[in-house]
Image (cartoon, rainbow, N blue to C red; front, side, top):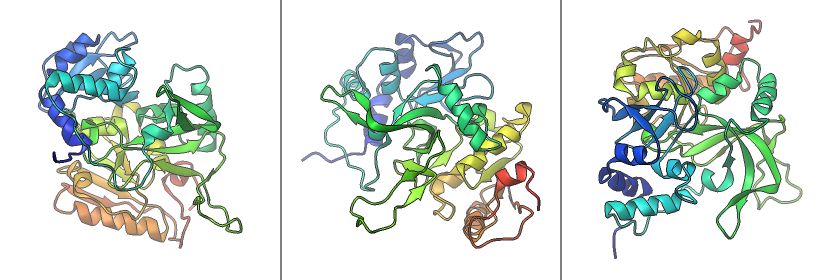
Length: 363
């Protein structure tokens, strides 16, 4: 019996046997220059006018990224997803199978995810920003998240999406009857930008809460409602695509003056919006998607190695415990670590946060 391998291991072997740059050129991407040490090659954005390269491919990871200009990251996607976007295949599985055959790689049996968490690919139908009305929906949601802008959503790699969805017999994903329009922000795993997002964090654009009550709950049990939820496994993930693009590229890391690590996605969006546009590449803003007190894993720390890092948590017990975890994990790895205290007393729960500070809440 052949040994089972993870999807990442299989993808890495396929890509190692392909001329990734040539494959993207065959799909219509115009490249400029040679690969940098990170594996990234500048490219002219696919599917829109781009007079100076504002996109890139990574010849090692096979990923394509469109930065949408200097500050705003439109999306990243794998070679398989890009080939679907280019109209060459009906779905990413067919694309990967075709590239595996071309590379002489047998996909075989894959290890299954043991987390039991929903695969975002099966439960989110992502939409492009050129879809009529999406900018309006996102702007309306921003009014409910004071300090957050549509530009910051795009910079984080966010999109509008339908949730939940189902797949018909032809393999076409469609919104369910009760589907909601959501803001979806990607979260990247141990492979960071060398792989597509492993999860998304979502909010209902209408501001309504999600019902996350377990299916086996009794009718008499109280319903569990949340404003934000995750689709896919978020443990050990990082968020903030435009900032991760700088952190994952050695050349751009040289421009970084300090990195802000904030507690949650909304804080990340608001702080990015507050930084002057010409300073955003100098001060990346990132967050983790696993919650305030989730474990800090090695790959999360490694991406911040050698950099100054400002860690700021919410002013409650969980937020302070989480900030201390990050500061402790970064000791001896970051060049400097600062715990930033917001000007409020620490509450047991639901303490003030970065957005409250940026929005001028009284101390």
